[in-house]
Image (cartoon, rainbow, N blue to C red):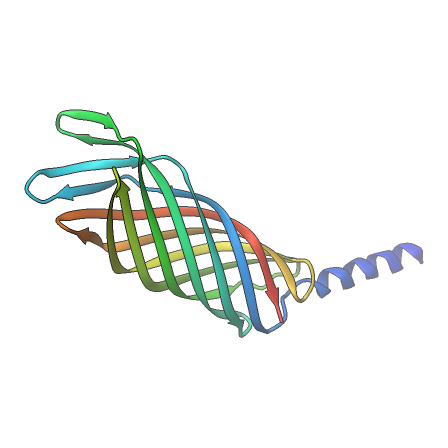
Length: 198
């Protein structure tokens, strides 16, 4: 009898945390940002391939959970130091140079319902990306449209609070361009954070 009551309690606990409550939510996450190797072209000089050190990123979100679809606004930032550039003549290290991207995206996500506290999800977003290359005291800015692909999972502590981990691939189809400098941009990020439903 005690075992039966114990198992019933476990089932109730799992079912109580199997989904987050429908309604508005806020989220915040931070983690590792990996900028993919990309070309940098300087008008009249030529093109090189840039390699970056592992960097960092964070994002904050505000959205609405329609169960199982979520729509959200996503403000993000990613930054990484440039390690070296490579061209026909070889590679050289690049000191004191970093590349940062701020983003304002609108995401649509689909939560995959399970009978556990874990809720996997997939999604995609569209929005504005602002790239900034800073080197030797010079700064180059450019804004362009971009997209991101998202896959992750939430662990629902209760109907209002979840731990969240996600992978995000972000890309600007057109190069960032400023003063004759064109920069190719793609990045991957692994983010961990929390989501609070109201």
